[in-house]
Image (cartoon, rainbow, N blue to C red):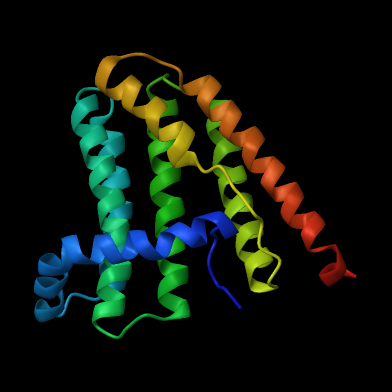
Length: 198
């Protein structure tokens, strides 16, 4: 059983990506391991990054975007550190997911707070994002993986970059499209789980 929220396609590429990422980040992971930094502490630092994002987004949008990218990097470090230190666990994976969701929700809330994104879309996105990842997780747990899931990093993150770096605001259409595609995956996951739910 797989306890993650990846589609079957993502799982094919995540292994090679993790191997490359591990090579690049090995010196940093080694330092963190020697210092005894817990992987979960690295995960939780993403939440602090999300809070600081909210504080920066209006006055310093480029710094806010750079910080957001840094939190994505940190999201990879926690897993690499857990594997390197022999502390990988289902609980750690859950903490990582919760921190990812919180970071994502804080960034969306920050964009809505400064008027760059419709508050209604911000709320819908936050709820849909959790339902989306939960449905992928459950489908994987019961070995009913969804073949392909278009995730926010392919649609929302480029729109965030355009807005925060250049002031070009396509966030409402990007978030609307992402919500629609996430619901398509949620429905697909539920259909694949029909026999389990009987």
